[in-house]
Amino acid sequence: MRNLMDKASELKNNADSEIRKIQADGDSTPLGKARRIAEIRTTTNAKISAFQNEHAKAKIETRDSLHHRLFGLGFPLGATAADKQSAKLNYRDALFRADTITDEAAAMRMLGRAQMTGDKELAKAIASVSYEKGWSRALNDYAGQNESLQNNLQELIDYERNLGNAQIRITESMSFAQLPESKEEQTARMSGTLSQPTGAEVITRL
Image (cartoon, rainbow, N blue to C red; front, side, top):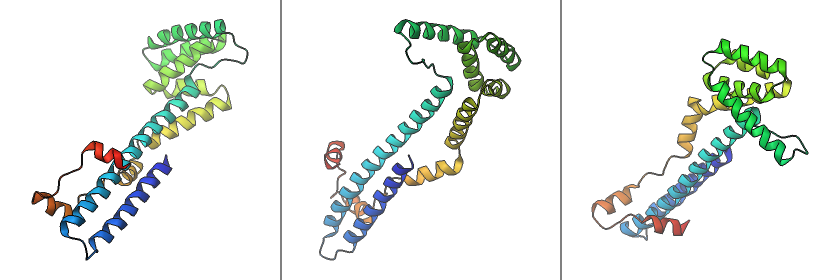
């Protein structure tokens, strides 16, 4: 994902360089400059928007992947279609039961019984609900079963913390900021000699 931010920043730097060259071109008319700059800016901004959308999608996919690794349903090698269907039904029923839990103390009691009886689907369902509700003690009790669960939980927590980090959001905003209209474009547009390209024209240039 960082690569997409770097690509957007590089794209803007290259566009800025091209625009400065056009602005310094003494052989071009003001309208000619405005049109060339407008083409570069609109094409660049469309690409930046595409990078931003891809970046946002990747963040969601990564978060969902981490969540599934911790709370999703997995199947052992050799599991038959019937085994998988049975596990899915059991987990669905476990999620319904877990959703009825009203507080963390009840979650910990039910989790303890699920762990004692080896009911892995119910334990996972309780952990999933605990994560959604912020019940850290119940969640840590679940993850404390083994090191792999602890690592997966910490990775998910760290990732979601980064999603809400103010500095990271500022960096993203700066990386995906659109190129502003140049003074040449503004002058030409206000005089009625420059029109903005249509969406179809921008897509054609990409």
